[in-house]
Every structure is written in C-alpha cells, then in structure tokens.
Length: 126
Ligand SMILES: [Zn+2]
Image (cartoon, rainbow, N blue to C red):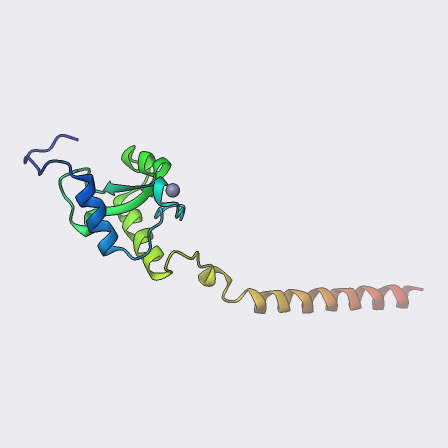
C-alpha cells in the first residue's frame, strides 16, 4: 500500500517494546497462540513506522499473513485484541454458555415427560 506521507523507518525492536508495554497478555489476537518466539507485531495500518500502541497487535505468523492479505478487517483485530486483554489470554466461553445449564435442564424435563407419555400410551394400548 503506497504511502503519500513518508513515515518513520521500520523499527521492529521499538514496535515490540511498545506492544509489550501496552499489552499485558501476549498472544496472537486471532488464535490465542502464546509461544513468544512465534509471535510477530503487526502494524494494523500497514505503516511500519507507526508504533502507536493502537496500531500494534500480536499475531502469529499465519494470522499476520492473513491480516496483511486483507482477510481480517482492522476493527475485528482491535476487538479481538481488547477481548484477549480482558480475558488475560484465557479463552472465555461465558457469553455462549451462560444459560447452558438451564437449557439442559429444560431439555431433560421435556425428554422425561415424553418418555412418561410414551410409557403411558403404551401401557393403555395393551
Ligand atoms: Zn494466530
């Protein structure tokens, strides 16, 4: 992507220092990989000289490539980055599982009632 304004030269060491200081949880923001040697620092606006913390995200090699190929919108990466910071690098399924116990209990009750009705119908038919 050509830049109209010349930017500061690429400085990966500085980008990594800024990202390490800004983000406590260090994992690929897409897949959650936490192996430090596998993590790269992505410049979300594709400007390698822009080391503003909001412009940086940890990504594994694969997801860095996919981001650079345009497969993930910048907004998604920022949302995922915030998610991993909030969960401190631990995947959270709470939002999807919050009423799983209640739903399971309703389903169990419904199956028990159906079984009872079937037994009743069967015994009254004999
Ligand atoms: Zn990844």
